[in-house]
Figure 1: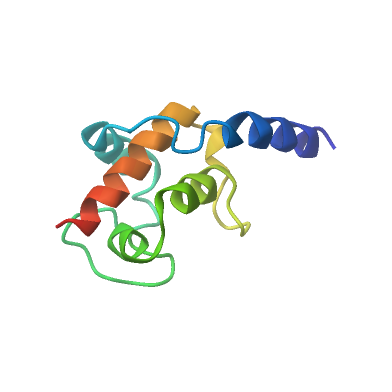
Figure 2: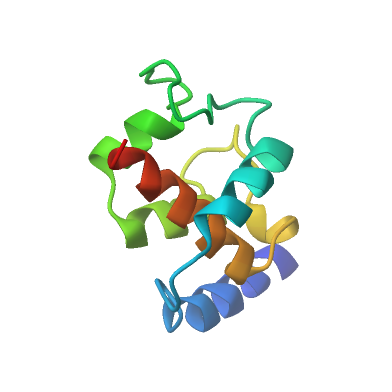
Length: 104
């Protein structure tokens, strides 16, 4: 029950801040290496894979708001909710890094 309440509060708080500020792609790369690389291919020249999706694949199919909200509030249980680990600002950095891969 506490998790549901916390999730609701964070969603309301974060919803106002979706894409709140342009993230720093370089900082996002460092965070991705630390938090995401265990499961995802986070490299700029990585394999274009579906499960779990590589960051290159995510950049091709998802928009900024969708990436941000999926990181914060994953739709599946195999990925931890990043709000347990990262502040919304850091999620914006990771989102900026992912979006930068689309340009490469």
